Length: 260
Image (tube, rainbow, N blue to C red; front, side):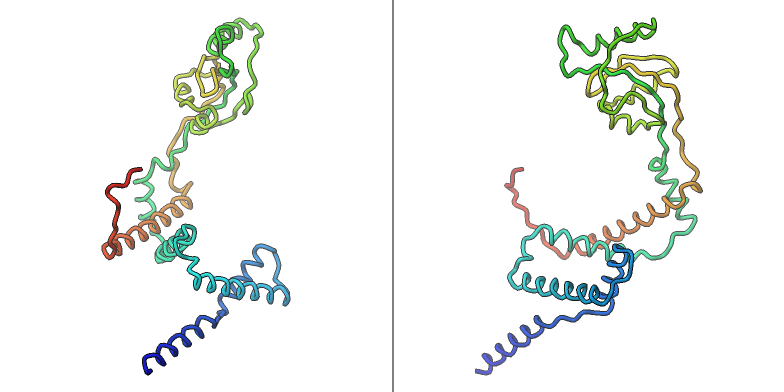
């Protein structure tokens, strides 16, 4: 009988706790601040009441979902909780970096800040979509080179990104044309029609009118970016160290016969 009474008391206390919702001042201030940031003005009394009401509704739904076990085996919830603890660990890095730290980080990651070469060029495009013996994109581009050098007219195909490009990096050139298209640019002379150059879409003849060589910027020009990158690097390291610390407390079982 004593055990049964204690059991019922325990259930009653737990149930009572589950039905109590405490809304902190900080929660309300945070929600009001977020609302103001989105809308652009302070909320009125009715809007504040609605903000608090929505928060209470959300908390009730959250607790009811937990009681039904809806949080179990939910990939989205797991990912969100993993993100939250990662953010908590990242925020432990509060000390601003010294000048020497920034310089060291920059020197160790210099390639990350390299400013790629850029090209200003014009091209004519010859599509390989309907290539045949009578309509070959490579042969058409070869003929076009001869015709353009002799100042004769010729037909080309429209390219979906246009004909002329201004100060485009090698990385963007490859994203536009594919097939490592930019590798040919390093050997193309300035102010001269060159081709054919193969892309993912066909063949091209290209005229480069200007080239700006790539360079490593002075740290003073990108100090803010270096500081942001260093801070993120420290945050990532903090999460990594936390994981390495707690991993030994877990046992992981993997089916050795699993085939993927």
